Every structure is written in C-alpha cells, then in structure tokens.
Image: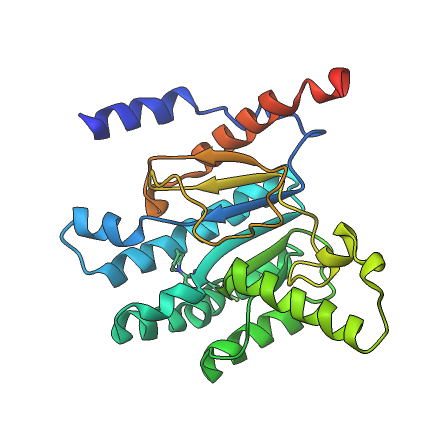
Length: 255
Ligand code: V07
C-alpha cells in the first residue's frame, strides 16, 4: 500500500521542477542523510548495503541541486560520533569517498562542481584523505555548485575549537574581548567560507539536529522527510525547495 501511494505521488509530481522559482532558490542547502541502515534492514540487507544505496542518492541530489542553481550543498556523511559504530562498518564508510569519486569525479569536473570538505582531517584514514584531496585538487577552479561533504564533523567541537582560537588571540593581545562579534566568531568556524544554510533537510523521520551546524542554522528553514535517505528522490528534494520558497516568499513584502 505504501509503495502504491509513493508511486502515485511520484506520478503527480512529474513536473515539480517546472514551478520552482529560479530567482529564489536557497543558496546553501544542508542535508542530514539519515536512514541508510534502516532502509537496508527493511529489505533484509546488511547496513553497509544501505550506505552503498545512500551513495546513489548523493549523486541524484547533487544533480538535482545543480540543475536548479543551488550554490552550495552540504551533506552530513560522517559525524565525530559515528566512530563508535562497529569497526567493520566504519571501515566500509571510510571507503565510500574513494568509491564515490572513482565513479563520479569525472562527471563532477565536467559539471563545474567544486568538491570540499567540512570536518577534521585528523583521525580519517590516509586512503580516504587521498581520495578527497584528489577531488579537491581537480575541482578547485570550478565555479559551479559547491559539493561540501561534512566528514568527521561535529558542531560542538567546532564551536569549542573556535572559542579556543579566539581565546588564544585574546591571550596574545591580538584581540580585545570587545572585538569579539558574531561575524568574527563565524570566521573561526570550519564553515567560514560558506554562507549559513538557508534550508536544512533531514530524512528518515528523526526530528533532531544531532550536533550538526548548531551555530550556522540560527535562521535556517527546516524540512523533515519520513523517507529513508536511499529512497529520497529529486522530486522529494524539489518538494523541499518549493516549501522553502512558499515559506520565504513573503519576506519581500513584509521584512
Ligand atoms: C557516505 C553515503 C551517503 C549516505 C550517508 C552515509 C554513507 C559520499 C561520500 C563522500 C565523501 C567525501 C567525498 C566524496 C564522497 C561519503 C561517507 C559516507 C563517509 F569527497 N557518500 N558517503 N562518505 N555515505
């Protein structure tokens, strides 16, 4: 029954890209790609099969975001908390950047996409970093969509590190406490070179932030989907975009 309804829904949304207002596309969309393990369990598959299917959704949503002119897409791929998962699962996850880039890097280069990472390099395996470094190098001059992977990222630690960096400058006399402003603090975060997200999407029905961009989401619109990440389609993405546009439309008149 659920399948049947989803199928119908898709049919009805066939032209959902057509009514997106291209002059009001969110600049930065951030996504918590949740539900890969549960998607696999539902099908009697191992969790890693869910992570693999999740990679296909990464490709789909990257193309969908690029197609409507989103400037930056941040995907939460691995949190600082995810290290507590079984070693076998962590090892598999750490090979996904390589696998994804082996399949997709050429097309990303051709599509003028710039690949970036938000997170700590320390702790990531050498092979993961090497794959990412190659992608970053090959796309560094691209001027299209910024495809930003949050990898080994956690927001509280990011904030603590920013506080440390400001405190060091105060201690050494470079800064006075009166110089500390919102924009100065933002400039010490890992996301200093990105605008704050305009829209945050979380899949799989969980209604939490899970230590993701706590400072940056102060004014962000939230969109929660009950779909598991591997089944999240470009049509679902465009639903989120249209709802974002509906919510923000009145600002022009009322702000
Ligand atoms: C990962 C697939 C998507 C669902 C969420 C968890 C599993 C793509 C990447 C990736 C990362 C960096 C990069 C290129 C690709 C990735 C991890 C997990 C750790 F430069 N998907 N994906 N990285 N999953």
